[in-house]
Structures are given as C-alpha cells and as structure tokens.
Image (cartoon, rainbow, N blue to C red; front, side, top):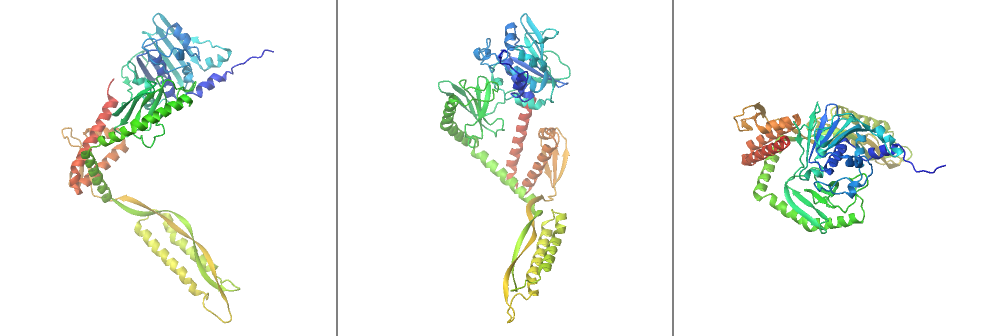
Length: 538
C-alpha cells in the first residue's frame, strides 16, 4: 500500500469562502491585482443581470498567465516591485483569484498583451478538480480584446450587489492614493468593452486638516497623520497601517479617547500579514517594536499638535458666534416645549403597618385588607387603559390614592387593637400588604406656537426663508431646500423644523439673528460643496 498525503476536493473551496466574505471584497481584490500588474485605469461595470466586469489596461502575456494560474505562487512576494511602474505590490501568494467563490459561481477572463491573447473560464467545478494537482480550464471562443488589457466578468451572483456600498468599500483602498492609477464605476444594461461613458471616478476621500508627516525608524515607518477639521465617521477614524500597498488594519494605538479627530496612514513593510487574510497582522516582535515606536511618536508629536491645532481651529470670533447660536436655539426649544408626565407601567410596592391583637387571637382583618387592596387596584384600572394621560389627570389619581391610604390608616379605628382591659392582653403585630404604584416618566410635548409653513418657488429670490407675522415662507427654488428634499422626506422634515425653531428664536430673541443667518449660509455652503463633490464628472 502506498502512503500518500492528499488534498480533499473541498479544501480550496473552504479556503476561498472563509477568507473573503462579500462581493465588495472580491472586487477590491481584483482591483489590487490590476494595480500589481501596472494598470493605470480600471473600469468596474455593474450589469443588469447583477454580474460585474472588471477591466484594466495592463493585460497578461503567456508568462504572466502561467503565474496567474499557479495558486500559492510566491512570485509577488519575490518580485515585490512591479516591472514597469515600480509599484510595491499588494499581493503575495496569488490566492485572491479564488475570492469570487464567496459571491459568484463563475469567473470569465479575457486578456491580451502584444501578440498574445487568451480567454478562459474558472468555476466551482474547476476548483473541485484541484485535488489531483491541476485543473484543466475550459478555453472560450470569444473575439480578442481591442487593446492590451484584461477583462474579468464574475457572474451568477449569490446576492444583490449594492452599488453605493461597493463604492464606499472601494474608496478605502490605499492604491487609490497612488499616482497614475484611477478606478471608475458605472451601471449598464448592455456591456461594451472599455467604454467609460457615464462612468464615475472613485476618489480617495481627502480629509482636510493639519498634516503631520511621519518618517521613523530610519525610513522603515513612513506616512502621514491628519488632524481633521471636521468630526470623522467610524470608517475614517484611526491610522491605517499598510504593508506594501495594502491596508492591513486601522488603529489608534490605544489612544482612542484622545485621538477622536485623527486619521491618516502609516506604511511599514517589515510587518507581516497572515498568509491568506491580508487584513490581519501577525503580532510578532517586529509588530511590538512598530507599536512602541508609534506610541512614542503619538505621545511626543501628535498629541501636542492636536492641542495646538484645535486651539487655532476655532477663533474667538467663531466661538462667540456658536455660543450665541446655542443660546438662541436653546431658548427657542425651551419656549416651544412643555414638560408633562405619563405612566409607563406599574410596580408592586409592599407597605407595612403595626396593629394590636389579642394575645391568643389575631383580629379578623383579612377580608377588610383584601377590600382595601381591591379598592387600590380599581383606582388604577382606568390609568392602565391610557398610560399617556396628562399631568393633571395623574395628579388627580395621586390625590385619590392618598385618600385611599388615609382610609387604610383610619381602618385601624374599627378594631379594638389598642387600650387596656383587665380581662384581656394585647400584643403588636406587623401586617404587610402589597399595593400597585404607577411608574411616572417625564417627557416633553411641542407647544402650539402658532407658526404656519407656506412654501413658494422663486428662482429670482435669493432668500431661503422669511417671516411675516406668524407665517414662515420657504423658497423651494433655493439650493438648500433642493438638496435637503433630494435626500428624502426625513431630512427635509428635520430641516423645516429647524427653520421654524430659528423663526421662533429670531422673533423672540432678535439679538441672535445675525448668528442664525451666518449658520444658514454655512449650512447651505457645506451642502453645496458636498453635492458638487459627489456629482462632479471625472
């Protein structure tokens, strides 16, 4: 009998499907592959049948195809610098091409470079045959590409592809920072090769703020840390740690509470990421050394810069304006909201009373006590039917409850529990009863402040809104109104409520009018810049 080490057919399937977990991860991996092969442009097309094509202008010759088809080949680790543009490659072992299995059933590849061209298909059956040592792929008969480049189409999707989420994930790629590398995305009902019509350039999010260059450990740790001018989202916050051109992790090195406006990237090629999962790092001695150097740099340089920058960022004049806005709007809120109480439930409360009884006989008070408890429950039956009753009704209930308690205390007069008798002896006994007590929650309701909203539309009127007596007129032709309405009813409603609050503030606190007008201009300009950035053509 021959003794042999074998590979089970499910190994490669399990390896792929446990490493990459979403369509976005698949596409990001293929974009990085294009970057590694010296592509300068990548076009992502989401098709109507939910398949996705990834095109580039690099292409593979016969030697590159052989390396592409050799899974686990360390050629990217050995040849870590790309041949033409001298880029630091993101990949190492060529395992990412299996990633499509998590979200798609098939991957069709067409490639051309100079006089060489090839077209073939990889599917789940191809991977099942790998246990023999190789898997013969089926070449497809298709016209060759019209340019040097590669075209990969992943099809038979296992889940719908969310375009906005895909764009958000692609924007996290560090390779978008590199010169001479652009990624575009589009939707199309009909696929046309290398067609950038209606395609949108995906830009790396540039965050404005104070830039702190990093060059540590004799050039082994390089990058840039930014103290942002604005609050950061969860995805933006933190320092991205890169190995080569790939982000391995995002961290604040234990200073999470102090660096809430810090972002940026640090590259350290001496760190090691795991074999397949490039987004996980091996915490060895090299990583401990790297962390120690970074912590010292943050303590000595970043935190002092953070304090200085925040002091300069908000001037005294701006601070005065914002305080005035807060004061005026805060007062408007106080004047338009009124507190009231509502019942949100009940709790059982034990009450104790001391009574006297004959030394050998307990007074027959059980029936009366039960009557009392039943009376208390009856007092609150109506309350449970309407737990949002106003404060006045609750006060009445409290008053009736108090009367009930007085009845309880007076009931002791019915029994001859106290006093003395020559022929009888008495002793004190504690009687425990249970009473339902309402749980009161304080909340607020909007007062009827008497303001009415009337929209109008006039492109020649530069005003966004104005007040005439108790009527707030809102110009629908204004850019701010259009921007808020395009984001959905919830945003528009919230914005209109803010306008009314400002109207109340201006009417009752005119000293804050200039501050509120400045706030309106700042909001309008911020929305305009945001929308221009999103819709700007590549």
